Image (cartoon, rainbow, N blue to C red; front, side, top):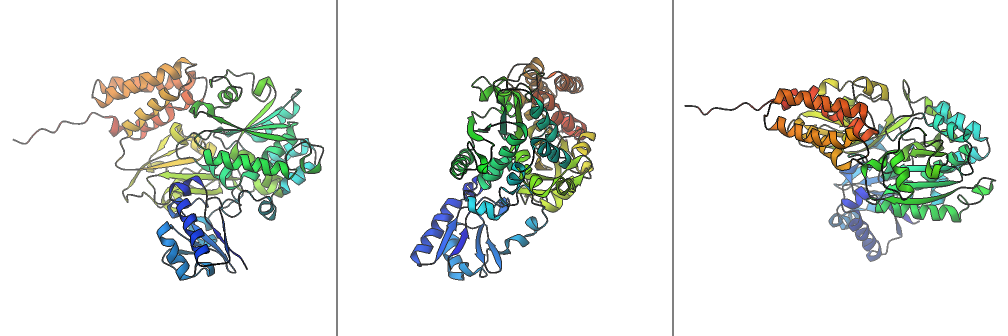
Length: 518
């Protein structure tokens, strides 16, 4: 019987040497004349263990990691094909604590299946949600998604069902589904992991969205910095077309749907839906004034659903298992699961999918394992470069949209970055303003000019020039940007700046002069 060995082709694993490991495994199989094959799967999301090699056994999949190319021969010598003990052996993959604690719904197949095998996808409930969608009415699909409580996972947290209903009810000769895969936030990689590790779930979610709203055309807008994701998605779309999943008759039904990939040049502001639509149309990626809403006049002036990758990839499980099943997870108005991406100065960086409600402290200290340096955690930024910095005093905050908003924070795309006590929060505040100045599309004055003045003001504080006056000026600039900017880039930049000033005032105080002892 052929033994299956899994070596991930996820970008994170490749960055850590997975390609060399895969070649070494192939060479050992050939040299030893073994009956084994290699499957290039997606990552399980435990990046400190990558490259993670797994082998299928009668007991289940056994994991080894992190594996280097030089370790491969010794793995085979020890009996890799039977899951034998080795210093790198981690036991049953599903029993690894980081994985065992998770509730994987959206990422249920990630790291388990061959990303480009439709047969594998079907074996793991693939297209079950789509089959149910085809058998029901568009209005019932929208109701199911609405009742599930699914909110936009891209950062805004807007109810997905309401957006879909708006497009469903809108009149137009052509409607579109646009997947926002322009994952530009620091410490975020969930979208990429789905596209590289389980592309068919995104395709399935987009088709369901199309059936629900009357759209027959979809676009995945991603960034040129994601070459592996683009290649995998492109091949998956081709395979789905040949299998009759995409095209003029979706799974033999009366519904038609096609998908194309579009790559942007990496402008951060194109993560904002109206800038994205401008870029998709071949225009400069600048923010559009709203109204009109994209749901009514979006791509090419037609009704358009713009949803994040994770929002769309969560739809198949909702359709398959029902709104009540999905809504049962979470807390308050934050329902279902959220893929938390843990990065920065942390021991166990990776993706952790769980129901809303864990405290920030549990995520950082227990799941993330504290800092990689072993020093105390000083701050955690949640929500990417525009997210607030939370001190340990706020680590009791539950991971929930409203709970974070109540403490002047935001969940965003659920990326968290951990900093130890060596970080200078004034420098972090300056970085936020500098980031905004560089990435601003330039359309509105508060963002374009405010961020530049913010950098200058932060520099004056660092130089000890009228620190109290300049702290007040920095706060005033933040207030203007928050309420005067056209989009979230300028509107949310005040979050990291003001949280740094509020929670870490000591880093904004003049450095006392130390007089030499006489």
